[in-house]
Structure formats: structure tokens, C-alpha cells
Length: 151
Image 1 (tube, rainbow, N blue to C red):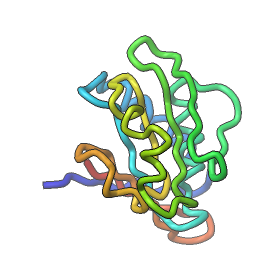
Image 2 (image 1 turned 30 degrees about the horizontal axis):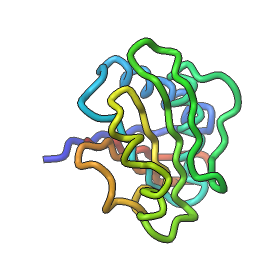
Image 3 (image 1 turned 180 degrees about the vertical axis):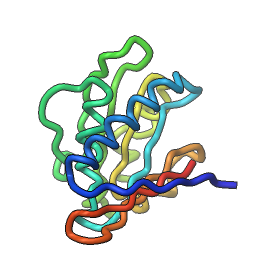
């Protein structure tokens, strides 16, 4: 049975703040057998990258976080003794899940101290691990978003 909960945000700043708080909760859960994988889904402009900006901040990552649409994978060092790296992956341009495997996805998720966020996760769902955190973004209106988290 999948547990889920919804969060509503009213502007980009509240989506960033929610992402930041969510990252802190993820860190508190500690290291598992494999990397922690977040599978993000939602239409263009629904708030996925905005959430990731806050999430990265919550992991202690400084600097600008942009969607890696053209480079596909962006790696950031995490300033936390339990975790090593945060990988931000954007699958929008991928035609085939194999393309992500060719970029070392299996090695990335095999490291328990990694945290991985995959935007446009439905495009690569056949290669995602079974234990993931699904985050779906729905646009309610110009500023309001519903963020549905399920495990």
C-alpha cells in the first residue's frame, strides 16, 4: 500500500521553502541500503525545478541550482557527514531509459550516501528502483501548486 500526502504552495518562494524542509527530513532518515531516489513528475512549469532549488538548499548546497536539461545530470557535494552527493537528473530530453543507464545511473543509485532527484521520472520508470519517493506536481492556478508525495 502506498502512503501519500498533499502539500499546497501559493508561490515559488513557498515551493522552495517546502523543498528545503523536505530535504532536512530526508537527511534525518539517515542512510539506507541504496541511494535515496526522488521521482518528480509534473507538466512544464509545475514547480519541479523550483522545489529542487529549495531541496538543494536544505541539503546545504550553496550557489545556483538550474535544471540540467541539456547536460542531463548535475552533481553537487552535500555538506553532511552521512551523505556524499546530490544528483539532479532531468530526463525531459531522454528518448530511452537506456540513455540514462549509459550515463552511470545504476552506479549513482548503488551508493547509499547519495541522494538523487529525477525530473520527468515517468520517462525512465522502467529503470527506477522499487523503493522511491514519488513527488507529483499539479498546477492549480498561476501561482498555486499541489505537491503530492507518496512512498
